[in-house]
Length: 285
Picture 1: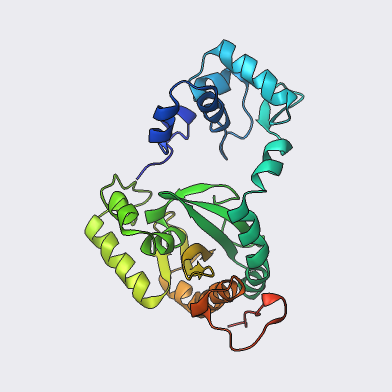
Picture 2: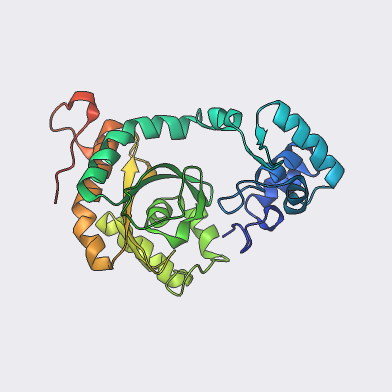
């Protein structure tokens, strides 16, 4: 499994290394290195910081930042620091998998959020990682680091485990081969234990993760299927508590995921009656 290093620095990130090697020193690779220098803990960076975190020469960084700022991809603050610009967000928001999935799933996520008042997230798989494409949170809900566009390893959360459980065998074997990053003392890093957990998820139709990503959080996730019955997303609730607290949410999370699947046309989700707008409210529990 690959991911961003402990410091979160751009050069420390080894995900997608093979494609980058193919790009060699192309302008596209340099652009990606610059953009991936930003993360939640470093959302504003100086010219020097961008050069250091991307591993690019200062002169190259200065030239590229000037071009990206002129195009609106980056924006410069009054203090001379840089952050991601709205132009990049406008382009990213057009990604078909994220845009269509978010629009279809949002009513169900909203119902689940109103019923639980906890963090409700929607994630899709991208290679051996997952990306969050929607999130709803209440002020009293436990703080989570997950945000729109954030990438996570598949093995360390209920959302990722659901996606991994239904991934192609080749991808699963790649993950089992590791290395599997240990986020907490409870993270599943033993391949045999991970295989057993994926089997359990496929049998019961949901995943519960207690302390796998953060010792203070527990989550429950269920699969979302498309018109071919392929699992294309996972719907998750993250809360403070224990696995017992998460188990109480299983019926609501599964019902919401099934509702999204039905709206996407999944045959296994069933269509007992035509629902206006494809929406089926999630009953309080």
